[in-house]
Length: 196
Ligand SMILES: [Zn+2]
Image (cartoon, rainbow, N blue to C red; front, side, top):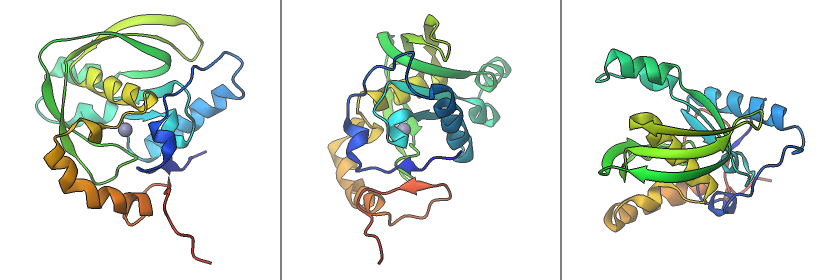
């Protein structure tokens, strides 16, 4: 089932998400629905707060990036095959000199900005079977993981841009909250006035 994606301005996107327990009701169905929602919106990641649940769960699938130009065959292969479910993730370390990448977010349609992040991340998480893993990611995969991880900490990529750029997109963000935006996937807008 495709779930509506929560738009910028909804307080759920600002909550520090709580851990997920093994007995969380219908977790398998929730993960399936989140996958369907992410693929339906052509996203490369989706975090639970984006569908209205402030729990420490997010998905990443970088396959759509594998078609982009400028990557080696090996990188393309890696991006193509990277699918993960992250439960109760915890970033243990970030390394390297920050690099810029033009990020977007399903909760903030039509806004893209260069965001600086470190290139290498060590993360501990549980998979959908609650098996614990510690993995090191770099490049674009690290980038998507860091972006999604921010969501479960209540942080959005627009928090990480210069104050000048923030001012420039302020009106656009306000319109997104009000639903004044054309988007081709299901969304829920916090300030949309319902017509009666
Ligand atoms: Zn996002």
